[in-house]
Image 1 (tube, rainbow, N blue to C red):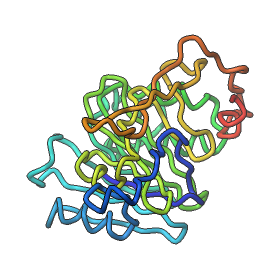
Image 2: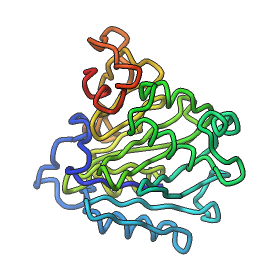
Image 3: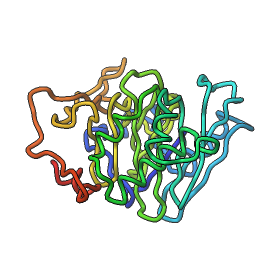
Image 4: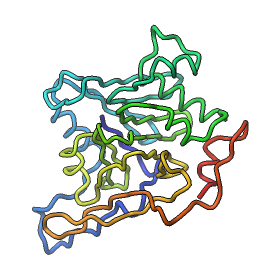
Length: 261
């Protein structure tokens, strides 16, 4: 899976940006690429087994089928509903119970459609805070949701680390989220890092742990084998707390997530 989102759609954490490569080091070092080149590289890496959907707001989603020789997961899904699109890898162990919880049809609902419905519930002022909704998703998974109506992105990675996910910064500052490490490295130069497990990212609320929603995220600088700063890893800061709880009840929506910082 691959998602690329222009700065008008989402702003990555500042810590993901690595210092610019000095011109004196030459052109041998990896440099960030633009969106078109990233998409071309992604399709070349999964030749004949991938496709992309691009949106006017400066967003793009790419999907790779399970038949790609570089695919290591049994299930990969891509679907869209009501202008909300989701690319999903892994599986939800409690899919059946979640289908009943959301009142969906068990014969037509897969993991990606369930995630879309959970997102739409949050977007449309659902009764639960975002961290609780994602925490209810039991399994080993990674997903990227793009809402073309609202122009927002929502991504999350399960806490077990069973599905790899990475993110970084493209040449124009766009956020790149992908499960293919080689593609991210080639696309983002030194400005990339693993997406933190047990966390979710939203355009309006930024990065946050859904396992420990009361704690802030702490950025730890990463250094590669050459000693150069290479993005940052993020983890829950056990010593730093968020000042206020997200609102719950009928008033809970994405603004409560943003306002909790």
